[in-house]
Length: 466
Image 1 (tube, one colour):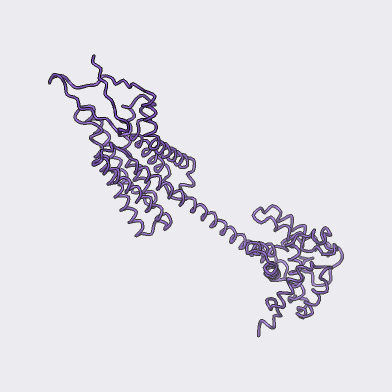
Image 2: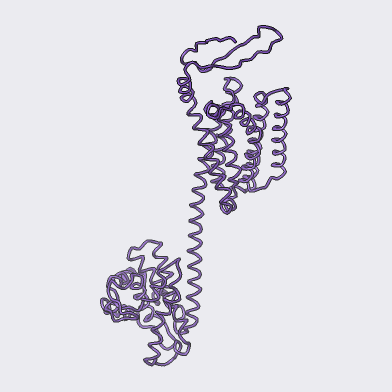
């Protein structure tokens, strides 16, 4: 047994040993290497390789998260049309292949042979999940194309195993085959994305994210290939990993914005649906009470005008409009004989009419999308002086939307045609509203109403027709 001490200059990046056998028929080999200062060696290895190791770990973790999202979020995958599982597997493979840059995993596991071989296997198979992901974002299955890529990856994988085990070649010398397939996969991805663009099957925001991300991946892969062939980087994937991280960042930004946009769209659809349902229900109410046809819609319109004049935001104005539409919904529970009686109501019949506020509250109280719907139906006949119904609330105890509806309701009740009477004179109606401000109606709301009158927003019907 012979021992040789070889001094390694400080700062050396690598050591190259050129060995020649003593006898021509004796194979060259090194049985063991002893490191004089193992602690210093490991410290040096960690310092040199920690950044690359961290890059690989981050990429693997991101891939695992995307796989989990894909497995547990099938609804999200179906909605977005993006194959998170394939993207996650691709990230995991890229991150794991990147460990080829570093000795840390090999030292920590003590099995560099297994680590390196498994990395080469990932390199041979990565093109399939990569192409599967790009196929998913185009909105087309591309089943034949994916089947062909899977077959090509498996042939590459099996060929490398057979050639290595037979001693005809080695995984290291077959890396270029996997690299060519990966490069071809990226070119195919570009082609199918361009085709999807021409057919209008890809969202513009997704297209921008994919274009920048794919460009970063291709540039990183090309740089790493050049480093492999011309700078002896020995399979380093530093720039490819950076490209994948950039791609992941672009996709994350897209998914976040797409999620926000979808929430806004659903919110808008819900608002439109709620408004349409409210308008339909208001028509049902007015059809039941033939003396007040169109009353609910007019009260809702006046309510929205007053709310806007009082400085409420657009969302609140729209909400108050819907509440105004359904303020009389309780009338559906009033018998037709009472509701449509042509003559004067008896005291019992008037008490029956007044229960429409309680009935309306009962109908609307469980609607969670606009909780204040029930409030408007319940309290719009409360008076500022506390002499209203059903509970005799006064002043600020009356909900704000009910105070506004009360003014709108009072105005329309006096200034609209009924089958048993014509509408009152506009100026007379305005005069009455001024008189009851502070007693029947809330002064602040009345002031806003009168400002609308002064501005000509609310005016006599005759003035509209001229």
